[in-house]
Length: 102
Image (cartoon, rainbow, N blue to C red; front, side, top):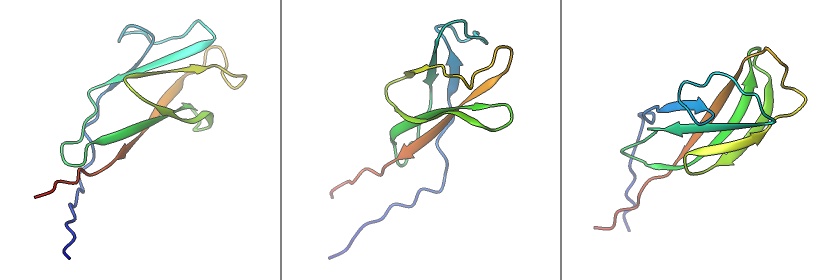
């Protein structure tokens, strides 16, 4: 029996990430944060799923990684969010290879 293995050493193509309903939004004024993304892809392995977290400017994770499907995720703000401070959405892209039978 022969097992076929596909090697994929290239990273996925990065897309755009934005907050709220408009790409140009740079702030949040509600108790929830909705993070949208578009354009992430991987031609060789394909993207299986995303995970999203929120990190403060000093590198502290303020919302742990959570499964994210589709093109957006809504996160509840917590007591680690502080008025006037910036935060970053962090994405993990989880890939899988397509098993082609020949």
